[in-house]
Image (cartoon, rainbow, N blue to C red):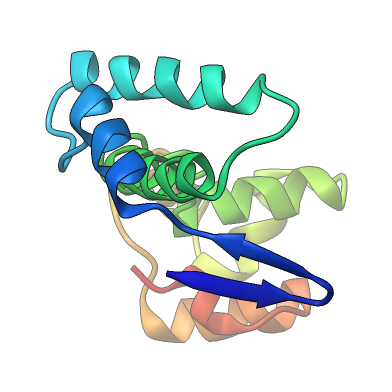
Length: 140
């Protein structure tokens, strides 16, 4: 396959790519060990100054496989209605007691903050108005 980019023609060699695939044996990642192995291949490829078109294609494939695995197994920055409330309180230098008018009792505020009970739709609407944000942030 030949691809013309501006003044330069880049040729993709399927045989070379097949050899690279054979060496790295990429597949859907199911374990930490497989992820670590393919991460090492990615790191090695990234460390090179000029990648061939075949290496670039392999790198793209491996990054997608790794991202897929990590998105499924590492829920980074997972926010919940509870964590959003805590963040908004902290960002506005407020205390949980400031939420009593919304929830009706400090005990209920504590239960929400501790994750014992969820936020009801009406409470979410009131939180949205209180914090000047979209109420959907507080829906479970």
